[in-house]
Length: 368
Image (tube, rainbow, N blue to C red; front, top):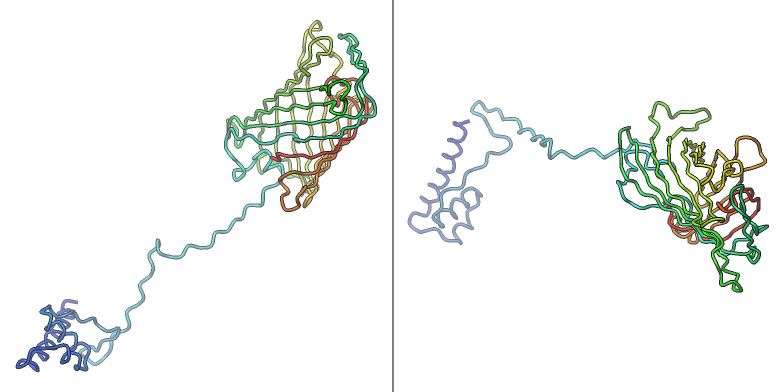
């Protein structure tokens, strides 16, 4: 290696001396340097004119050795690991499903805490028509209250929000949520009585949602067991006696899905209250102890069927059907048309022991 460097320097020095000797009598000029044919000699002439040291001669890719052979071209330097092109990222995870996004079941769906999102449907129904109005609400422990002036045509709206209080708590992926829902029936078409609110129900909840581990998800017919939920809820209509209605309950829910279908099953246990303060001791008999919801999500449409049952027969409970479609097809998560049909007991807490059929039309908003 040292021998080659010395040889290169000697070659450059000889070229410089040749140029200097050729022009000893006459100092180098731009014209004389430019007239030199050899690139190395011409560069040496420019260096001599500028008073610089001779430029080092770069060895060619192939150079003759003393025995007449030639060196092999220098191999291309491999790129350092940090300079090598990175492989294209591949995402092997399956796309998120409806329930996974709704309850943030998988790591890629987690959105942190204290983000307020929709819970139950948020809707405004300017037209809500019921088959019969409960004109004499009562219960075993509350006197009859006459309400004869209400019309069957009214408006109905619901606001429902939830937020996550804690994420990945104790169990893998387990989250703690708080929710609040308010449902209102408004006699907006009853100008004679100053358009009063006929009923308002308030329902705060506290719940824990635990995703099902991979090994336990698989079920027959391609269904997946996606989560288990336990919760504590209070519901009341905010009225004073004798119209006051309220109850406290705990519940356990299991969520399942298959393709664009989802199914939730819930069992409810009412918490005991003293008889002297219980406004509606027979509430679960009419409203039910179990709830089953079957949901379907299409390309643009959604549908949901709710069935509440007392688990003792088909006489009590209720059925509710909901359907939605986007107002603007290019904004499916925005404002949506909303239809609702209800039949049975307990459309409102005041009407927990009153059977009716109702239909409503309007819009839903604030999707989760």
